Each structure stands twice: as C-alpha cells, then as structure tokens.
Image (cartoon, one colour):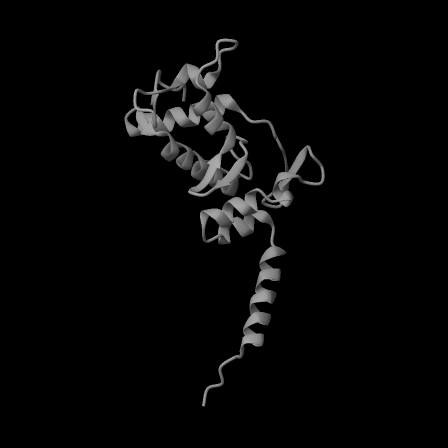
Length: 168
C-alpha cells in the first residue's frame, strides 16, 4: 500500500523548495518564473534594483556597469520599432505590455534592460512607469522630447501612432 505524505511533510517540502529558489541569482529566478506578476516581483526586488555597489550589477556571473537612469531615446526607439511592425498604430496598453516583455527578454539575455524604466505591478499586469507617463502627459512646450518627436496619441484616446520612422 502506497503511503501518501501528510500536510506537514508537504509544507516542509514546499518551504525547502522556496528557500532553494530564493537562494538562486535573480537572473535564474526570472527564467523559472511562471507568471508576469512573479517576474515583476523578482525584477522589482531590492536584490535586482539595488546591487551592493551602485555602479555595477552582476549578470551571468560577471560584473557589468549599471545605467540606472531612464533612457527616453531608447524607449522611443523601441516603441517606434514595435509600432512600425504593427503598421504604425496600436492600443497604448498593448504597446506598454510588449515593451515590458522586450525589456524583460533583454534583461534575461544580456543582463540589463533596454529602457531602464521602473516596473510597476498594476491590476491588469506590469507596466513601464515612465513610459505610461510619457503617453499620458502629451507633448510639452518647454522642451522637445525624443518620445513626442516620434510618437503621438491618435484620434482614438486609447491608441498611439507613429509620427516618423524610427532610426534603427
């Protein structure tokens, strides 16, 4: 007759597995993540955002410089490429979700993101905080921004469109 484990044994196994996973480097934990919320939690954790030395990050076993400032030019170029592939127009939340996935893939592959934007967990999934602000605020008259030179809100309030082709 087969003996089934009781609840305390199952709890002990889950706890030891969780400790084992938490001891892995963030890059390995991202590869094992099963949901977008879990990925956002891992990426937003202090261990990934704030390395010991603020000028360096450990990625794939080697030290690489960390550029912690949001890069609006690269963000605009990434959005421009995605919009160009889609025909020049897209729902803005779909664009932000795709940009998040590309940023995450770059983090896994190369050890650093493309946009260096802050990830925020929202009820309908993760978003790139500064990118959403750029879409919502519209162009400013005080300064010209790379984002608003390339992308604008269309007549539909929920979509964005490409003004000019991105430099790729």
